[in-house]
Amino acid sequence: MFRINTLCGHLLIINVLMWLATSFAFPRLPLETDWYNMLSLHYWQSADFNALQFVSYMFLHSNTNFFHIFFNMWSLVLFGGMLEMVMGQKKFLTFYLACGIGAALVQELTWSISLYSEFNEFHTVLENGVPLNIQVETVKNFEQLRELYNPITTVGASGAVFGLLVAFGMLFPERELFLMFIPVPIKAKYMTIGYVIIELFFGVKDFQGDNIAHYAHLGGALFGFLLIYYWKKKGELTTYM
Image (tube, rainbow, N blue to C red; front, side, top):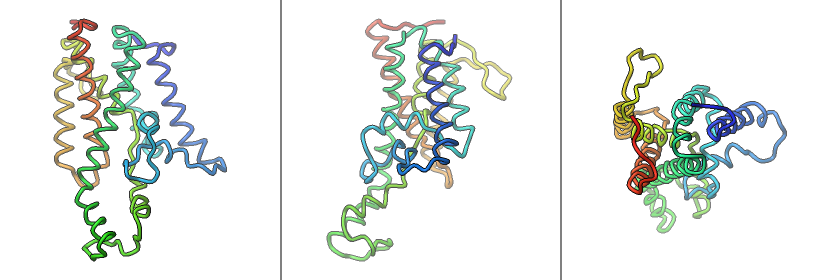
């Protein structure tokens, strides 16, 4: 059951307030600091990266796409209330943050792999002055190199929410749910598997123009699975029908 005065309700309020602030309040204030950029998750070799972003990024959402926060908060309401009841507030908060941070770590790893060859080219140019098939003639030192990666960011609670989805599927596998726009009930365990397969497909395919962090979603799902498996193994959680 979802209630505003629960921890799940507080998370919903924080996310909505942050979205309102970054979408409407902050852009209209004469602020010297770009809070949205500072709190977004940056690539770890970016000059704008800091460790706080592993937590702060999950409380930000796109300020140009309303459906980003809508679907994340709808999922938080759908799964979070019941999970908080069976986990307790402390375990639920630990789980939510761990899945969000796990998603960020996987996203950093994904960036590192995808940019590995490009970084090697940059380093070759900087160290040896060898011109390659990239426009780096203006890059003179490693600090400038880091600044080139400042725009690479990700935001959103999706990683933490995917952890909640996996937890619900593991703890309430037979519970039937209705997905939006689909009038047929689906058991939680099948819905969880289906979402993971879809995210893996889109992550591997890497469609042009797709700016969704699919591997971050999978990272949240992975950390969620490992935590629930560990707690069930210790007898701290059980499966409900």
